[in-house]
Length: 84
Image (cartoon, rainbow, N blue to C red):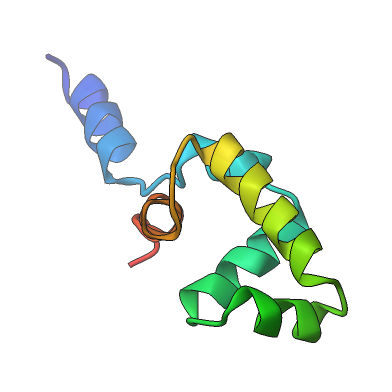
């Protein structure tokens, strides 16, 4: 393997990449995930964003679908795994 090819391979694996799925989330969905990460309840998130608790649940459901996860823990792990 030449030095140039080796350098490219090393550079490719050193760059942290966000999960592909999080790129599809809207700004509002990312905002909701940040509140979830801080431990807010759906009701508290709704109050902060001036939306109903039902609307928060709808957003959360869409987030889970887009990320292919089943719960809050999985969603947060998948979203923030490369941000450390």
